[in-house]
Picture 1 (cartoon, rainbow, N blue to C red):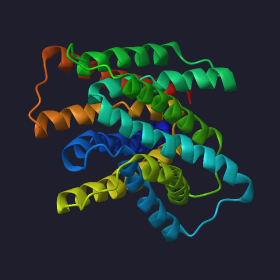
Picture 2: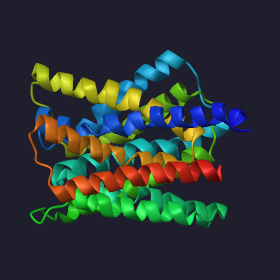
Picture 3: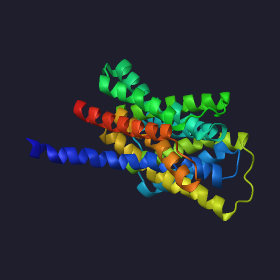
Picture 4: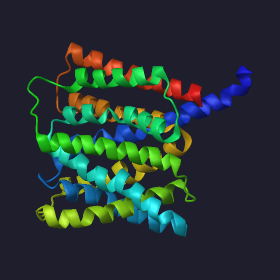
Length: 293
């Protein structure tokens, strides 16, 4: 029996590792946004992250959704891309990265609540407990006494967590006929079109960009959107939404590690303990969701 289960177990952890690459890539967003992009243009940054990569994927795949799928695809594009990306960049510009990440870490708990309310799936106690510890670990890792509370930034971070949790949950609930790349491309394209008027109306026009800024936008689009979202939606199709959402906690951990390496930021004993708690919580949730499956 153990031998028969080996391929399934290996496939599960391979899918988990590939999905985890997406939030690991997203963890670089804070550094790229604050260090390499023009300031105070959150909607433009979100637009240039999503729309070009969506156009590329749609042209490459040459697949149209079924007529009955357009409505759901538009909702998913708004939740996963348009609304979430706009809120993400607002929070990134107005809050310390740690504050936004702590609020975003409630996503697994939100998805468990959605599954309980909508599908009558009672979440496992161990998954709830691990997710609560993940929030506490994230706070220990990232929060400081000098963190500045910005009401708009806090609201954007909370709304972004709800939007992403809803998009992750519904992406699995509403199975699409499209292959993963086309499914990703249409969401990025539609989400980018949602962001377009916001960028034109709210943000100041872009200045003349230097090569560093051009490369920063190209990185966010090709690596941070095209590649990362393809891996993310592939994971949603294969894993539990709770498990996928829990992997999203690796994004702020990556941001902390990059800040430590690139920006020479310090990591105190409490921060290190928080990091280990979050990592342990992610692993516990993955094992719990695999046992349920």
